Amino acid sequence: MTGSGSGNTTVGYLLAAARAALSQANVESPQLDSELLLASVLSTDRAWIIAHGERRVSSVNAATFHELVGRRIEREPVAYIVGTAEFYGMSFLVDDSVLIPRPETEILVSHALRILDENDLEGLALDIGTGSGCVAISVLASLPEGIADVQFHATDSSAEALALAEMNAMQLAVDLEVEFHECDLFPEDEDSEYDLILSNPPYIPAGAIDALEPEISIYEPRAALTGGPDGLRIIQRIIEGAPARLRSGGSLLLEIGAGQSAKVAAMGRNAGFRVNGIHADLAGLPRVVEFRRK
Image (tube, rainbow, N blue to C red; front, side, top):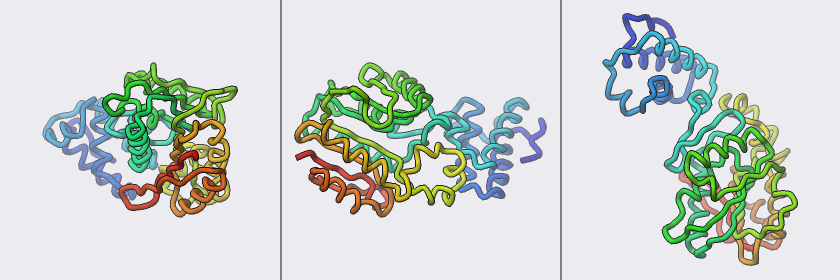
């Protein structure tokens, strides 16, 4: 990206130059990414950027923008560059210690809210592998009217991820309703009986990671992506450990990957669960398996 001297530093000029540079680097959404990066530099939003192409940009801000575009050309995800990602209508802090929240995981949140509403639950829930905390926090921040006493435990093996999740919980004013645990999957020495367990676990086969786009294969934390040789190792452990921690009639919700729904459903049945539904994402792909403890 060149030519951003003081005589040409308008919003529109910088966007056009960045879009051309990102397109040449085969970045998937050069216009959107350029707008998000410049909005971050100018501490505004995309709507303002789009509406004010004629506004001049200081040489300092232009240089900062140039640097961020360079990082995007190296395929670093925009969310890591700007430090935030949108999920379920909220803004979450993210960094390279956590997965970037994705729209398909919103299906997990929606069905958790449905279960809480249908059963009028005001009990205890568990989010396994919480990462940025986006799932548990989104559920707590979006509870149906009349359900005000849901408490969450949220686990992760990464201290860095939990620190970020705690900041997100505070930022979105649900920190009193969630307790974070640094552990493998289930809280250690924990006698709690949960009404709902949910997880977006690692489910990509180990051998498939390097074939993914660089934004994922290079930058996102591999431990949060890889579910062993077949992608099902962590899912299997959750299914095996959940019955002892769920109350009778409690629910388990698991996000899954492509082609995994039949195997995951069979795992659940073998563990004594009833399959209560396999829910598709917006692309029509099976994305969340819902189990009910008999």
